[in-house]
Image 1 (cartoon, rainbow, N blue to C red):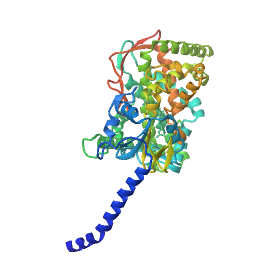
Image 2 (image 1 turned 90 degrees about the horizontal axis):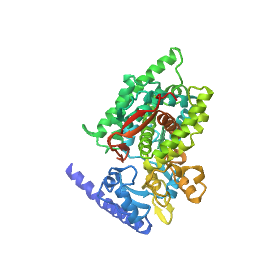
Image 3 (image 1 turned 60 degrees about the vertical axis):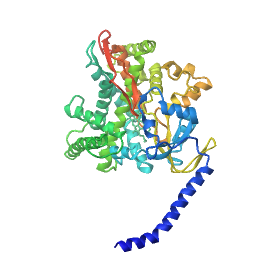
Image 4 (image 1 turned 90 degrees about the vertical axis):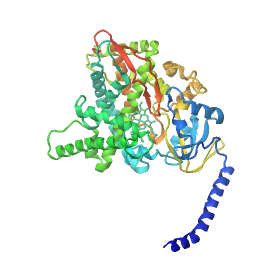
Length: 488
Ligand code: HEM
């Protein structure tokens, strides 16, 4: 046996060594000939990953990025997540990458994300299957549904949260924002009711789940990844049970439920059970972590900017007055369209807070950009946060200034460039499917918040990018009711 192996080795080893030699030589030769962006490879295996992901205040780009941009410019090369990577803090390149999805670049998240969100999750899918899932999500959050169904739902869930606050009480604003967006999603995705123990249990399960999405994919007891995989199974069990119940209801022809995404996917799509499970799991995730964090950031920034709160109160007071004159119990779409300054506050919150800081892409074909070669097969990360905090695009980028988004200020070329570089929801064929819902959630919540309460930080806190944005202490605030709470 060992004689045979030695014979085989003697036969295969020399050509394998020659092939390896040529591979290394050719790769080096190709690299020398290419004009790669400047940069370095960092440590063996891990590259610069730890330095890149090191927690930093959400309103900054972090030391690693700052130093690299200062040394190499807005486009540099590095080694991240185990692969040679181009990092882009260049607004034009970021736009180019997103708009050429599927042609020159393709969505490509680390394997840990696929392991946890599932292989049918929209973040992982590419090509036709991605398009099909996207259509389902866009249908669920269409303009028509936003106006007729989701606006009253958002308002109902806002009031449920705000009416539970007691005058002069202190609590975590981040936690309350998460309850609001999670309950809204759970209700509209699979008709789960807020305050019921199963809904709350599912929400808490997502906290463990979330921690694994950004962890190293080490699957053994005790690691964050292992715990997140367990959470994934628990979450899937709940969704599956809901699905079984729904199939039963549909076959027994009992009273029809309100149209939720689960019912729609079962009746109108050709998706398999496994695909529906991953779709619902990842929509619940995408739909509540991001918008709740955006809301918490708005509460934080506004606390430090009383002038903006005053202007919001004037805008929303006027809207509430018109609503009362009409005799309507709730807000309508015209009321929402009148929330102009609120939209400036939302934009500024997303620009400065950068809830989604960068996305993962892979280069499909050799590309040349601004004289640099971007080689096929490399990873490329468009970093939106670096553009949103770029002083050459936004004046005083570290200042919370919602007025920079006002129409009257948007006529200059500089303002147009700033608006053009603003990509909190990504762009191109993978533009966030929930961006309109997210804006609606924030605007309606802010409407009732500013009319019902004033608030202050109960303890100093700061949002950190880890890389998911989170307040270290959960953003503790103390609220004081204004006249009769939530009667607006
Ligand atoms: C302020 C809140 C939000 C922000 C900043 C945000 C940001 C983003 C970004 C940057 C992407 C692109 C990811 C990529 O290109 O790889 C994305 C995708 C997505 N978002 Fe959001 N999002 C928010 C809220 C929501 C909400 C409320 C939903 C509702 C369910 C949602 C559902 C999705 C979905 C389904 C995708 C995948 C789209 C696709 O691949 O075609 N997002 N989001």
